[in-house]
Length: 235
Image (cartoon, rainbow, N blue to C red; front, side, top):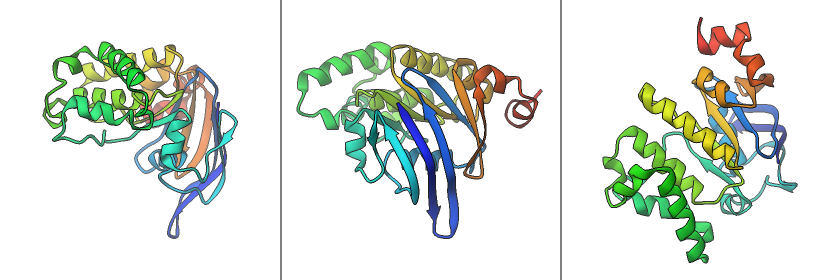
């Protein structure tokens, strides 16, 4: 469904991505592991059209994405939930969610249906729907960010560090939610530093260092790999 072939990206003289190739098949949950600065966010911003690739190909459902506008990429069914949530803190939870449906603005009935599904997935957001998004806890704000992405009706979802800064109990709930989203039929590419929790729900994984893919394999293999455990899990 999503296939990257030798994607490169530079910021001036700095090579942020160096011939990155990976794929996520329809229905898969694929994890991208890596420390801060490994290139995970740069890769997601390139896939979603925010940054322009210096070379390579990004195919989604058989369509070339390189050169498309971000809105066209969302319309194709590939939606990015960015690191740091990027909410509008002074706007209500409901308004933030509705912004995610911008590309479907001509389909009022469909937007209402999707909104109902999102609020059913995150009941606390229904209770707080009229509250400013900035007044919510970190975990609740992450729910808004994921819910907003789901309002785009993704066939594939890019999730960038959704567990960052959350309490352990909330992290557990967040990964359960991500697994449910994947089980509903959405392909998920998940960038995470929380390797243990991510690999437990993933089908496959890649390890990224200094803008390159340095390892790949099924989740169980990487979960028990000594180098991965030492670098990302401990013990």
